[in-house]
Length: 568
Image (cartoon, rainbow, N blue to C red):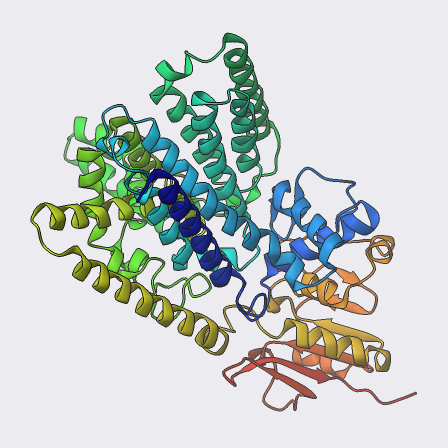
């Protein structure tokens, strides 16, 4: 096969990989998952509000940070959703489209990232081989990401992290190609890393650190760039870094960080109390040095808590099996396919032994840095907070596959048998995943996806003229944002009625039109012309619901009952 034919083959293979990525991300899209979660509804309504009025639900004009629910959302996904709604209309497709679209682009970007890393290798034997061999690991890395359950699941929902992951991957790719071919791309690399930091909170740690590691590893090559281009790159990086540090230190927008801090959990407090007991016990015994060093020092205790959280993200139970995060996992399928497990240690070996050392260091540091932001939060392990692990994991897995392939070739063992088995396992596991995801997530996990809010809103909007008040329980988890979103409530009218007063968890002060959002008691049912909406457990057995909404597995989801509606 001559060089031109090899290049054509690579292009065809990459095109097929992208088609596979599109299939997995857009088949039955956006109907699976079966409903939007509260963050998706918030993105949708705020984007709609900005498009119509220029303001968010709190009345802030073109905000940099979107106050939403109990958090401040970063702007990149929010404004992408504004554009998506402007193009495709106000619907679930538009809300989820940016994530799916950038998910496909991440697959493409990964190919060029790995190709760039391989091309810069000074001692890597891969560069001395044919075009196909030179691009086999980039192609396989992209293919593995295209079929990876972890990446697919977040591509099919409105996930800020998924868009941020694209910008991180693109930023690293632009850096490598800018350094070797077109120095002007270095500025775009800084911009891409910067956009990643304004896409998802965890990437405010990951993106700058990966950019810094790249710069340090390839500094000798970077110094060969035209001096003016190098100065512009350094100034741009410093500018974005200064803005990011200022945002982090002086803007009180990272409520979610405080709310999810592992140090504020009961488990952490219990550990600190136990350390206090040990300190007093040592003091009674007159043991001073160990007491001061180990017990009267929160550094060791805090480090122990953080390290435990950090290493849970490398647990096989989390990565390869259906874990407790039901909204982030597919029934009986892990974030990664189980068959990938043996290739990861082999890939690490192959990466270190056969690849350029700088490439190996970068990939290994990437996977080690990615869980750091999540390790200080209580809800761990958390699939979306460590989505950045997917890129190095797939690169390592691809190296592992070719470790086996090259070993078989060296031993003159027919590789077609291995490739046949490998292909069969991939097809079987992918088919099983699609079956579980498309058919079983809606049926088994509609509760985890807060199904029923759309049906609730449609019923209430259809029948609201018969009532003076409609009380929707805050136990339904931010019901106000679902109702605003699904009813397409006029943002200008909503703002005129006061807008959102607070989006905190369990907030009971929000009202609009005839809707009130707070919990209710049995005594409230004596009120005339009032409708009550809540979870089944909130209603007394003596109250017969007027309307029931079930989850897709048939279990009760939402009850709607009326108070005394005697007409005057």
